Image (cartoon, rainbow, N blue to C red; front, side, top):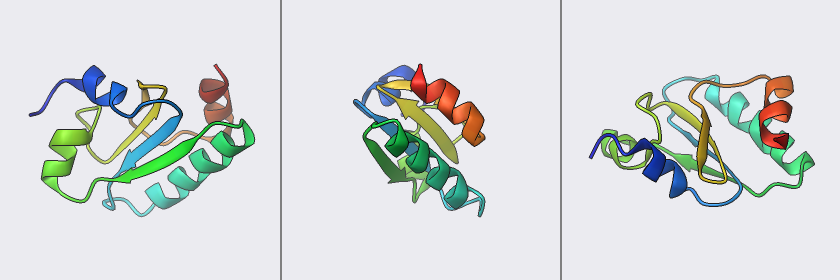
Length: 92
């Protein structure tokens, strides 16, 4: 059930998706930053909460199961990005 990273990213579909757990208190702010930049760029945004180890194994497009940023089915980051970094990767 682990692995298949590209397949799991593709399953996120079009637009910007943040997959995250509640493990780190800073991920609320990181997800809000992504939502803001995606909205400003006119990109659809959705957030998937990873609430269990099973969710991480089934859904996370990276082996680092606390945070992932996906755009149009391609995994872009497994750590939170700054607003400047987000503008660069999401505009590409």
